[in-house]
Length: 265
Image (cartoon, rainbow, N blue to C red; front, top):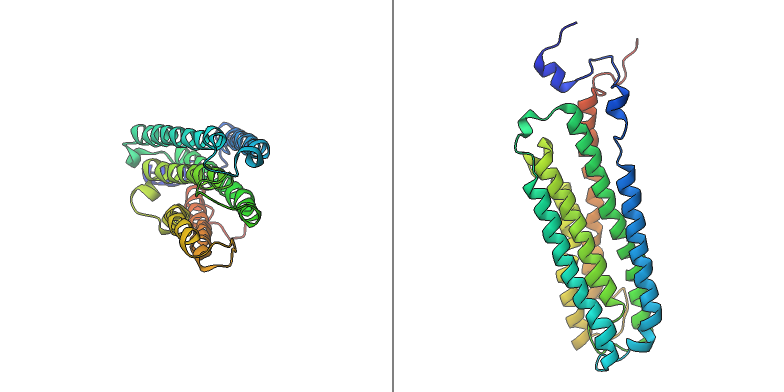
């Protein structure tokens, strides 16, 4: 049976054929996801060990020279490395963008969708470390230690390491989709924007939080109003569920699943 060019573009393997093995093998970027998770976990454990060694011995008094040596140096190093990483990664994604998306083959488009899922996994994995570990640790630290600076041994890893890192990962995933997938290049995905921009806006909220703790609310209670912004903006990550449906809908179109659901032989 002969197929037109449009039919082949929509369903490259025919309505009843399966994709060849060489096409489906390596579709899921397992190496990237496992490697990324291992590297990030190692870094986070290393940071936690650093805290264990230097938080109590050199992190209680901002005006001591030891604090400047062990914590402010750590902070400045974070900023420099994050700036280099963001510039390099985002620049690479943009420079290597696909300038001929109208000629993208369905098989390659499917591969790119799985790569996008891998990048979203990287984003969510860093968010997990931020919210489930370092954020909870921060509350415990400030309930027992007096703060004389906004740059405390718990804030430096939380606000200036993990949060910028998940911003870098989230924006990278968004840029990848915008530059390599027609579905996202031709229009803005609202769930994608909410899922990335919402958690990013936690960083400006940090300024209000620190101002409040400095001038009118010294106690560290997570239910306090100066913390509400963290929760509300954190909830925007739930928009990634909508993004998942957008991805699944396009994958269904590429594999022609939607045309055969509920049919009988």
